[in-house]
Image (tube, rainbow, N blue to C red; front, side):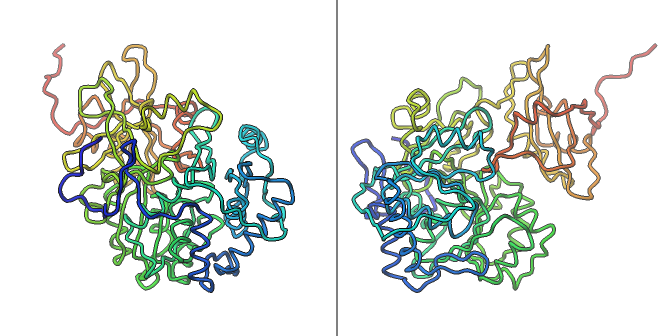
Length: 518
């Protein structure tokens, strides 16, 4: 068992029970997503559940349409436990299709609609899918069916990790996993059925942030989910104002774009009470700008993986400005610990245990055994946990740069470089070197219209980093960093395609070595 939280732990931990494996569980949860949606439809039948464009769908309509999709799937031969691929963009059909798959007792396999036929074909074959609900096709329709005999630990969905290298892995997500995360969202975001949230979903629904931490908690609390086809700053802010959005959750880059080009007006965002960003530490400058632009909102940084069904840690509003380098505390039912990595500091691989951790990878016992060991998920993230319980994620295990025997954590370097006002985005990667083994390379993306001097950026970072951590190579990239659908930077692509220049450093102090006399 990992240690109890430090004094001052900010989240509600009441009502937790411990199972026979030592894993904390939320008590009194709905047994399945079907039971969850039925309760909301019974309690709030006339409330708008979903909004997309000019179309609104009340809870009673969502339930009825999902049941008819379930009937159509049953007519087509889909049975309990069958996998059904859901390859659609954000919209009403995605949500109705997802719940329809649950109501027939099948397993949803959300897939990015922008994948090539080869990429999506791999997932379809790997999952052994019985049916595909695809973009442009009508949803199945038949006599209403509700299969309500599933158990909490039955499989409800398989989310394929987008990954940054290699083939995607199918994270097997149970009803219990989903509903542990919705309760976590309620507690850390301070959501309530007494004031149901109105959330704006710009993240893709095939990703755990959009589905697990926005759509599903909102549906459980009888709130309204407003769906955007894609993120556009002006449309994003317009929807916040028009739909009186109370809960936002988006990638830091989205907020940065909205602040830069969206012309945030106080009266247009006055309804926002919860504003989350996440995945990695966020520059303090951006957090301060968000606090000024959304003065009535509680800010927070969330961290998690597909394998944790979304939330694993959360940095609450009280620490958002003071500790922008952190991803927060373990969420209420989660235990954290560090696995030693034979390093000379307090960092280790972050391990996670909790009811939100998925059951493994579909059809891949070897990778399941390597990643889920003794009840703990090996995240592959290098982290530190302070005496106050706050977590700093400093790198990926495979991305730590070993420069002549010294370990350099890329996130730490990225944070220091990102403090420069001309830098919009930064990624730090290893550059092979015959003598040192690896050296530090930094890809810098300037703010539009900003003049970016790499030597000045490195010189400014030298105030925060030891000399061996400073980049030896830099590249200035005019376009945004390449990212996967989950928002993670594709560092393998950067390493392969970047043309490096030697980083020239400005001296900030006189050299202690006198010039050589000829």
